[in-house]
Amino acid sequence: MTVAATLDDIPDAELDRLAGMGFDWIWLLSVWQTGPAAQRISRSNQQWRREFEETLPDLREEDIAGSGFAITGYTVHRDLGGDAALARLRARLRQRGLRLMLDFVPNHMAPDHPWIDEHPDYFVHGSEADLARSPRNYCRVKTKNGPLLLAYGRDPYFDGWPDTLQLNYGNPELQQAMIGELERIAGQCDGVRCDMAMLVLPDVFERTWGIRADLFWPKAIESVRRKHPDFLFMAEVYWDMEWTLQQQGFDYTYDKRLVRPAARASRPPRARALLRGHGLIKTSLPAFWRTTTSRGRQRRLRPQCTQRPRSLTYLSPGLRFFHQGQFEGRRTRISPHLVRGPNEPVDDQLAQFYARLLAVLRQPMVRDGRWSLLECVPVWHDNATSDNFIAFRWERNPREWLCVVVNYSPQQSQCFVRMPFPELAGRTVRFQDLLGPDCYDRPGDDLLSRGLFVDIPAWGYHVFDVQWLA
Image (tube, rainbow, N blue to C red):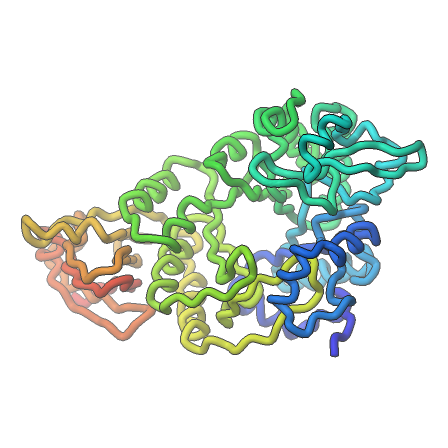
């Protein structure tokens, strides 16, 4: 039996647990008010319904609430307790040193948003020819001022989302109205994740709709920060446009380029190049890992294969971004149209891995230290497996650092990890693995001359705490 809950029903014990795990932020997805129009579409769309039934074999009609991205207003959903319940939750988070992040969806609104009647010029209109040519991207909408032919919200590579209508960023008044929405959101939280933020960039918008638009994000971010100087902006972004959005004011951007190759194949040279970019880009990038597939189907990966990119991404510089159910190894994607998910068994091995990883991430060295890549060189002249490694270190001072070494490949590999650090001379150095049982004592002079020798199985990794013994 599903029991309705509001934000007030989140227990203090759960907030204490999250704070104790070392988190700084809590991101709540889909808190905003939605309406009956999008819900009807979600319940009647047969393609979506098949996905819902794959996720929930016992699917009930009340499980389908409608997408949290089909917003009718930036007020907290009445079923979650409204704005007052969010304010109380935010106060409880602050008591524990936690900051609150919410969503902002710049590209589209629900088909029953009040602006449909009040400001139809805020939306992209179509013609009969558009509808005939592209019926999956346009629809007829009844309004108080008569019927309109409007575009569904979409990105340029896929059909439109039929439970949304596309906002027109070529209209300066729409841009100002959306800045007003952002300013209101900023009064209720400490930061926003901006959904598909690249879709409103002028070149992307014009390519999608043939409509010229002015820059939106620099104006919006500046306006919010005049009232809330410490407000944080994070962009969901694809198509190698991370740096573009950082230049326009975003503090963080998704870094799918690093995560997706790690999940699909062994590409250490590309991953090293992306990690070098962290040092070039002054604003950090979030590292995160999903245990789900895009269609909701379960995908089983070997624990070693999944832990390898996790250890790499989460120990790299930037915001560490975790999802609900990730620590337990839940693998089924829960559609934003659903209010319930399936029961899944806990992956005890993965849960233990995350407990150890979070303990490492809580260390001040990884939170506030200096990060640098380390060079990996062949052990002998015709052994090319050294190219399979990625190694880096975190340090707070010359005698307090971590060394991370990952075999980013499906084969046993060897290398020397170069350690050109003069303070090693004449010392005995201990390498204690924080995510495994290994412990090695090595002469500092040998480390200086040749480096640290490692021989690691496929997908293997070490996170060494480096200690001076003498």
